[in-house]
Length: 606
Ligand code: NOJ
Image 1 (cartoon, helix red, strand yellow):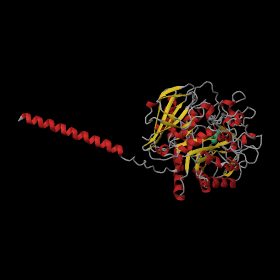
Image 2 (cartoon, helix red, strand yellow):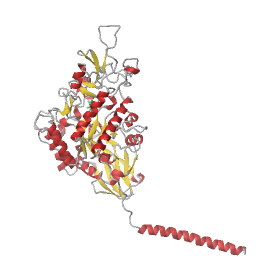
Image 3 (tube, helix red, strand yellow):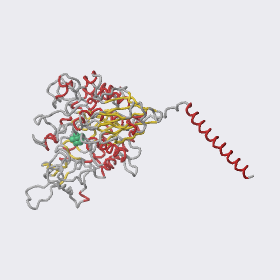
Image 4 (cartoon, protein in one colour):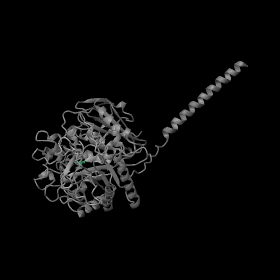
């Protein structure tokens, strides 16, 4: 009896195991024959969330009338360049009426176009033509300060009712030791050097200027100033502008004397002995930068803009904020954890401030992930490689890194920002002391040191071709000299050459339209000190992988360590000095990359 039971149990178990094995085989086999699943559905993103945003520095982009200065008609004549390059939106440094002390960042009339750049009709034509081509146009909004030639300042200095407190005015400090010598209200230092306070003979008071003496700081605690900012924004939105870049926000608000026994408190001293009291760096800007109240102003602007969008319909108008601050203070521009919403994004300057030719692959990964880690949930990231305030990207990094850097920009999730010239790898131009016009260089530097501060090298005219003044102007007398390398580096030449930075740029802007890049996941990691990978993947869509050797030496990496990369994979884009052309197959998992070599590989969907 017992023996029978054992036999039944053994036979039963074997039968059950057989059944399970059969079922597993059936599942595996039937899946093998199953049709490929349909591509993952992707929801169309709002236009700005994955756009290529191009910064124009109007003075240096294209001169239409031969005066050596770029202008709006020049921009209009080259709008096709953006379509050709695959750009979706442009933002222009200020084009408003200005004495040009800081080349447009000192606005004397916020409601009109600067005469050297053209007329209001030209601006309207630019908007119409850009919109016809599907391009968005953003203006530079400069809320922190106005020119001392603006009506606002003239009226405020004269204490005209309504304008008396438009700016930050203060009495001198009492000077018991030397009553004959005036003392400024505090030790605050201007961004362009010297005291941030300037005496007005007319009003017999000091006014605050965080930038040049001619750029007077508005008082954002005055409701009339806040209202005027809404009026200005509304004026340009009504004209059809698609939004604004917001200038210099960290300086919007300073400490209130009401909180400091009636006087402007001194900033603490940095203790850095190389700086004298008039030099930037002498103090720590505790009371002059990143004040928490400024964010409320930004949140109010966002509310205003959202309301405008709601009432007027059409495509979303956006604000992108400018400010150099630490990561926490930067992220607050997106919004805060109490639910306030700010800019659509703050510009991410990490590639300018935290990375350079000295960085290794781990530094790149760490800095990229820092933004993605700190960014609030649902935020849209963005990547900036240069602008009119910093040395150009190939100069800060190495010339052989141009394609790799443009690839990072285009392959990372979010918005890719290009400063004019980056698409062709333009480098800093040389500007002698005699030719230097940048106020920061003139104020802070001298013939020996100006190059440490000058922003002119990043502002030299755009290189269209190898004709007179690089095709920027018919005049040889341009406002800044044309960089000497224009015969070698120019757009026309790069369009003709089989492999060029521009052709890569075009391939990359096209690639960004693929769902993997707009909607896919990212994975980024260092494979060694020299090389890192960035994988973009989306189920059922092709996988794209960047491999970038940022070092000055060859590196061999093991592709088996790159997740989701199945071999063979095809080269989609390669840096122009790479021996591998687009279409080349990578079959071996051991891959050698030359110094600065960057490859985008296309691989099977995950
Ligand atoms: C930031 C701008 O980008 C820079 O060019 C200007 O000098 C300052 N803000 C002051 O407006």
